[in-house]
Image (cartoon, rainbow, N blue to C red; front, side):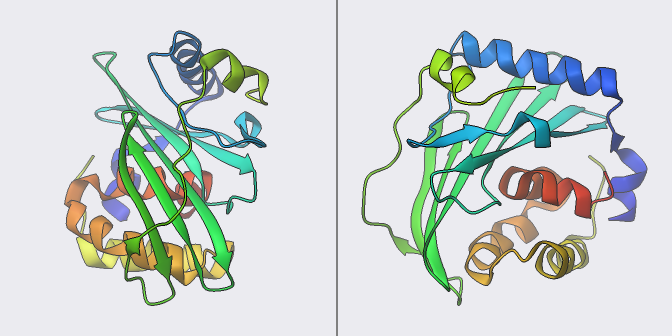
Length: 203
């Protein structure tokens, strides 16, 4: 975690505004695809941005439609201008269970049921469809370094559990991929936990 904080810093107001404007342009042109269920919106007022050696990471929560607050859209803007996106939606189905649906660069990567033990299983029900860019904007879009893998994840996980009450069924299904991600762990965490993750990482 110390290395991440050394290599990254919270974006300035201007850098954040520029990054958010770039994300909005990409959504409007439908080069950046999102999949908002009915009643959900991007909470741009809660967006966070961090700047590192490879570019800027913008984390925007997805709110509404009964989704858990960990749901969000993360966009990585490289210094070469390349954009990559990760979208995650956590839909509780009970006190200790839920459905996790994720996309990487608009392509579905997970649609799984999870429980407190963190063991995923195929999820029942439909996957949210791609949302037209104009609908996303009208629906509320308003205004790394080397990491010690397991220790890093344990530290952030404790913050997420203690300060943000992220449930075990969410943490369990994502913890393994995060630990395996190595230097990409910070980006993986921000993808799944949005502004809460960047807060826990000191951004």
